[in-house]
Image (cartoon, rainbow, N blue to C red; front, top):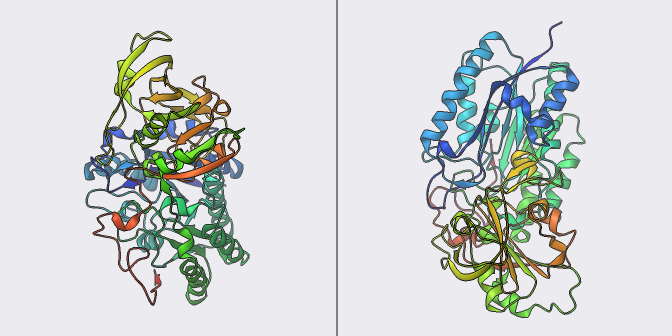
Length: 503
């Protein structure tokens, strides 16, 4: 008997529609055909699928994968370029005969005219000759803005359960094992979807606390029913202006529709009940820094800056924390700024040499602009490093090998600044240690994140403070110029009687 043939494809981007600029096709990293199989062993979701394929003896038919870290809205032409690469490969695979399709997706990609890009991708795959009936399974990020269209066209998309995303690879394994179950039992599940009228900013979607903790527990209870193959809790990605932005629940099931809807409704009602717990408020950075008592600090104090959250699409060059550290002359302090211009300005510098720099502040109109500083050069590297933690949130974004681009370390008074050429999310301590920086040696560390840093930094810190700074990933959602999101929705609107939508 011939082994099952499974077509593999991927498209991964989290789109911040309120950022300036666009994301072009040239910004994407791509892999075609057999090159996709090189991800085996890199701890990514693709690696998770490939492990299951090996275990079950599947013949993998790799087609095309494209990804780029979170950034501005994607040009329509970029998606069409992706499709022009995938479509002929997928057509050939379908013509030769495949038993299923497995997709590695994010779930919150948006282009200039397609705000449900994953739904569009699924629709186009279904329209290919032979694509209308083939089972489609895959994996999604917990921050996907899941649409009813996606669930109508797929059979078994499985989301990460954890935020930070320590289980991205494991989620891909779960999705692939559901595919194996489908092939072995000849039972084809379907997906159903429900959305409560709720949006939460990223800091409110950590699974270490409610509301997400309670919702994930609800999902696990539902999965005790053998006819509910998987239950997904989507925290949503609230910096994308789309009709489907926000919290949603979906299940992979063989239950009758009415029973499936009842299961979804219970979770949606729970999300509504817990809606206020997903709203996080914090003080201005100067207020927090001014009040720090470092005399008794034995471990680093972490200043978390969600407004410049790199994992949420922000440019990573915000100057809010840096300005405050310099203003209050905080000793043994550390920040990381994405600033290729300053890195280039340090060309030829020797350790101890001082150079005048204009640091950061170019990526968002909300920022006060570059910080002028007389900086003492410490060191430089090529910026490449390997994750210390293979379950790092960063592994979900691209595996264990990370490239920050040419990087340099400088000191300004008591503040150390790591300058990188590429914005790099602070999800793994290997980022610092690879540059000769031991994070435990610092009293204060600024982190451009919302939740995903916690797995790395909570282990070494005494305490953390969320701080308000100017930036494009503010948690104050009503301040954004919403046009396409479905209304009414909490916290943008007053709602007396919530409506729960179903697919």
